[in-house]
Image (cartoon, rainbow, N blue to C red):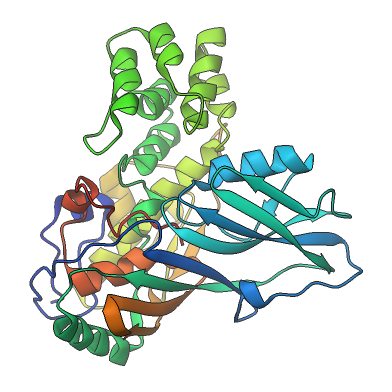
Length: 381
């Protein structure tokens, strides 16, 4: 039987077990954010920082460098500056230094954009699809016992793989409820979904967020809207504005900059984590697991999980979910420990750095979230 996580957040998100079947004790470490967490997107197996465009093509390709800013804020600001929709290959960490490619269709409207916490630099033209193959991570674990860290990294590296759980950032760490919003949408409780987006403050949130959420929960949505900061809470502002204007939770959810399908897919990700954990308990982990859009199409452990969850379908008027087929294991290159506590490793696209870090550190992710230091659990791979 694999080693089970004792932590509440892991249980709430379905990350019930560890890959390495050793009962390691928690390893104390801090990650100085954002400079101690670096994410470099890989395109065709190479770092995106090495990409060079040409003079011809159907799209203008940029290098986006973010420092301590969330993806939604940076992408909206950059798109407004370009006057064109900016497309990305993946979503990166909000509390890190990240390097990734972005593009606009057609010729470049500008060669460079500088915003609050990000910069966009033209790399040239490219024809056709850009193939995002993975991400390289460089993480500084300050204060860690380097000898023990090397031992654990060597053990994990020898396996060459890690459980392909969806990591914490898929659900939110300060507000780990993306999947709960998705569950409410899937079950037709649209008012409940709106309430979960705007209200229900979490302990790890900034005080300003707790304030407007508490106003909403106390029955003062107008006051809550006035209290939402102008920057950083676009989701809550748009949803609440439309809800106050129309009184219709469906229209409010459609006004979200994150489509309702984002939340339903987060719920599907939670179901995948539960299915993978259940397969481990049974001792038979298939190479891939399928989480369908309808419970009637589920098989094996996923059929059991969806029945226990009481969900009949993930698709509805607001969101059209597709069957999810995902590898049970993620190929892992590394981790390697360099001097000074730096750890480097690479994962395929769609796999999460936090899953590797939770293996090495075995720390309580919820306690880390509330620490005065930035935690290792805010990356967006």
